[in-house]
Image (cartoon, rainbow, N blue to C red; front, side, top):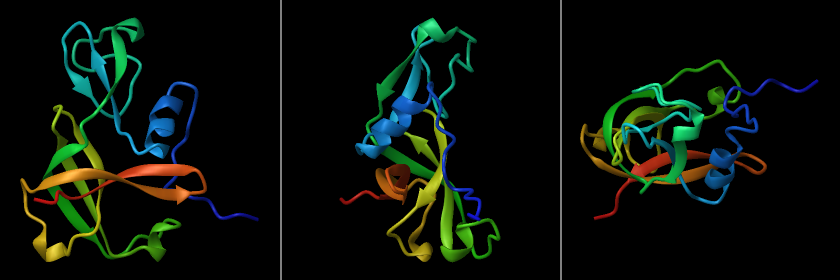
Length: 139
């Protein structure tokens, strides 16, 4: 019997381009042709103006972000998070505008600061499944 994993995406036909790009080290967003706004997490419609699927397309993000907020997690009973504590769960402001929930890696927790510049990186969560995380941008 396998243990449930709560860190893996539920990939479907719509989100497959996002996860395929992540496996290739690229972060994708969706952008609306009607209002011009980008959004994350991927949705088939625009959450700003409600334009339909035919008006919203995939776009590669720059990978640049700033730290909006974070919390250092010391206990998480959901597999496999319990084996990874502590970790910095975070919300970042992507350069393209949307906010994204993620994790900050490769940074001492005492060095985290609101507004610090970050850069996207990708961690293999399971064989062939890569998820975006962020690390401090090197000056």
